[in-house]
Length: 116
Length: 111
Image 1 (cartoon, chains in turn green, cyan):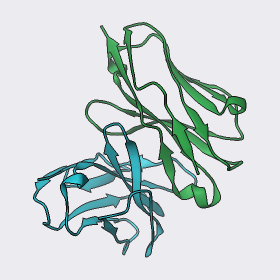
Image 2 (cartoon, each protein chain N blue to C red):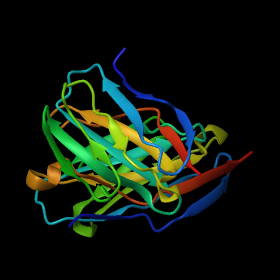
Image 3 (cartoon, rainbow over the protein chains, first blue to last red):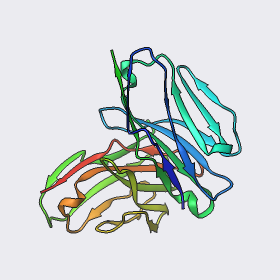
Image 4 (cartoon, each protein chain N blue to C red):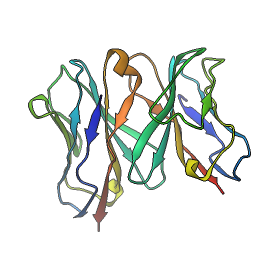
């Protein structure tokens, strides 16, 4: 069975602060895929990143960066110099391989509020 | 423009009145799925389809039906809606091991 845990239910930061959203996952698959999605107040789900289990390189995209650590089964997401527009619910998700490739398992989400 | 569309976007109905939420994608994706999102529970998969005429249950299939007669369409059917099906519903599609594209969501209220 697959499981994704986002222990932080809600986080509030002041604009320009850095913030890290935690994601811990469980899977028995040796090949799997990890994702982050953003859900702004308007409600749509916006894809942010996909990471394959065999690629442990960290990634940076503008103010966003992701730290994938297989040894601790974590895929954390950092926003540098946060902005009000970053306020949203962020979901971490996991998809396995084989029979598990048909299911995208989501964490329960972390609500980020960036205060001006 | 590549997209997943859902209709209706908002729906208020009453218990027991059959309804269908349509989902369509224009990317020729093989795989489509439905999720519901509830506060504190995140997104949970209802049904998925690997290709035309191939569907299977997700985590929370009770009270729902689906069909996949054409590649582009994957409607979600509630034969006899109940208040516990009040939720935000998302349709999604993907090709192979690619990333999922999500529709804009359908907010359903069952009175």
